[in-house]
Length: 388
Image 1 (spheres, rainbow, N blue to C red):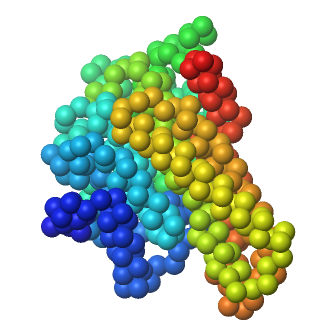
Image 2 (cartoon, rainbow, N blue to C red):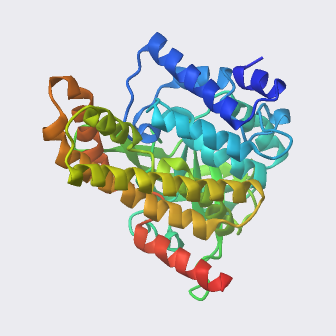
């Protein structure tokens, strides 16, 4: 019995779950020696950690038991996953390998996948052994996904995929990419129509990956070229022509989670630790207090979205708001750390300097991935208008 299953058997609440994942992370770090990281859900890829986390019962919390997961029967799996996610990010754990599959692909399979796809893929996700990338953005079609030009053409009893995806996180290490492609001609009056999703194994012939390397040498992103990649109907996720609806639904999970405001949490906590016991001036105290206050407020908003998702509500506008406000908060946290580091970081503050160095490189990406802030504000505005 996993640690999570034992807790549930004992009737433990979310506070008990939080205590359990914290204990696991402290013990696992002491045993295996990983270093807390900024933006760990993108930058820290450790397949062994993902397996250990799954064996402890902390992956697959939204996947029903019949598919190998641990979703509670009362439908509160998203809240359980939220608690675990907060702690993983706060500790800077190396979660990159399983992250996208557990966060985004699993809910997509539950909502739109065939029974065969669920039986084949969900147990591997719950075991922390399936690594997935998402193929949405393209050159000229970043936040404007309606401009996606990749095309899947019907050919006999299958499909032929052609096109290019860019900024595809972890594709070079993933087993599969969930690709958004056009399957019918563009209708200029209905730009969002005619898209479909495909689960594309990365070992198929015709797939070429080119690394996109960050300034510090890190390799997380890729340009992925699809040249006459042959797919079957079993590779279709959901219904042909329903890709836009499916993608916008999945983006609610991507945009609303605590990773949209806790990517720099390890650095923020290191700042607070560095300032503890020092003679802090009023301006610095106010700046740090403002940052922590914003973090708490964003957490409440993000939890509200998690509750809405648990209830099956449409939370796209609220998810977009979390992402917009959260990523701006993350960038502000980097600026504050850069301002304070020379004043608080002595020889014993090397961890803060290292975290800041990574955060500076990653900071420009915060407001891009998952949709630019300008596009997200349009989603919020339309959602507010519709609700009024």
